[in-house]
Amino acid sequence: MMTVWRLRTGADKRIRSGHPWVFSNELSVSPKGLPPGAPVELQDAKGQFVARGYGNPHSLIAFRALTFNSQDKEPTGFDFLHDKVLNSWRVRKAAGFRGSFRLAFGESDYIPGLVLDYYVIDQAGKQAQVFVAQLVTAGMDLALQNAEGFFKGLAEKAKEQGLSQFDWSQTAVVIRNDVGVRKLEGLTGNEAKVIKDLSDFKLDHVEILLNAAADAGVIKMSCDLREGQKTGFFLDQTHNIYLAMNLFKNWARQQKTKTVRVLDLCCYVGHWSTQITRALKAEGFEVEVHLVDVSKTALAFAKENAEREGAKVTVHEMDVLEGLTNLPTGQYDIVISDPPAFIKAKKDLPIGKAAYVKMNTHAFRLAKRNGFVASCSCSGLLEEEEFRDAIRKASLRNYSEVRSVLRGGHAADHPTLMQFPEGFYLKMYVHYIV
Image (spheres, rainbow, N blue to C red):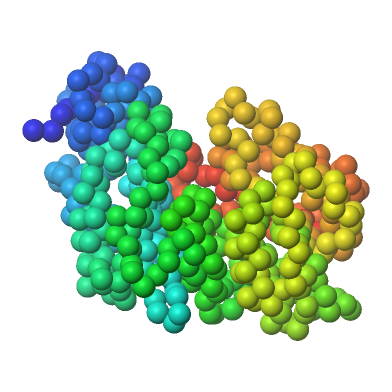
């Protein structure tokens, strides 16, 4: 029988509004004795049903809701979770995603604890699919103990429902539990694990397919799906790159010179610069790309990707907060500032904001007049107003007239819930320098 936890009197307002979390101090009694991640039914102080999900007596977030429907009896069972993921898949298809995308985005897809990226891969003209999952809570870790069984069922149902063209024999599965956030749940950070491989593919150096930002086709990006950062690729900038590409193309058509210089800071495998190259080459421009990252491995992938689309590439292996003083002032038409999250915890806020000011100060210094700077932040703890303030300070140190001409945010494969503001993290502005 499922364990029942009750809320304190008056502590049900937030979760009844659809927020998926309950904190330990909102429960009527201390939640002891339950194995971390075990299924829980949540009731209000009067014993009325509120939600079902899973609990963790050792976490500040003691309960996470999977359903607010009393008819859902087994919310951690495979059938229920499959339906959740397949619903998310339909959202992505409706939004026009054709290749690789984030398939499940935790609470924002009503599946707390599961971050799941879906990749269509291509090697020597042969294609397959890869699920790369992060199980970041005790509840999801427990629910997907038989991860191979879960993904086999998911692949079969997706094929039956026309969401995927691939069957289980054309599927690989990688579990990336090498993330620090698991420690907050009392879980260990395990090494990346391939639980189903594909003999015809090298997952540590494979080409993924994803929507091209400037046309109706797909673009190839080489990356490492075994041990690359996050799940091997950063899929969250797809929408922002699409928005910026229309801006860059319109600007380029008005230029007298036929060479565009792009500086891609914290480039990782070069998603921004590769998409820009494809877009501007189609407009008849030559593209010079300067790639900056601290990782030699990432730079090798980025160089391969940008050159595949026709860019002339220069690589700079450096820490962006220390080495950018060595780059020439005012030499780049488009500067991309897309660093990893500088702020991991609330205590990091002052230092992290200062890092955003410093990096964007360099970005504005390096950009040409009548050029662009794209400023991005994936630090969820940094409020958008604070990010705008960091950009303001950075721009005033370099130019008196800077116009923010584009504001971005989350793509459809990184959805947000109005009742879950913690899911909003991605911020992007493009500025035109006069």
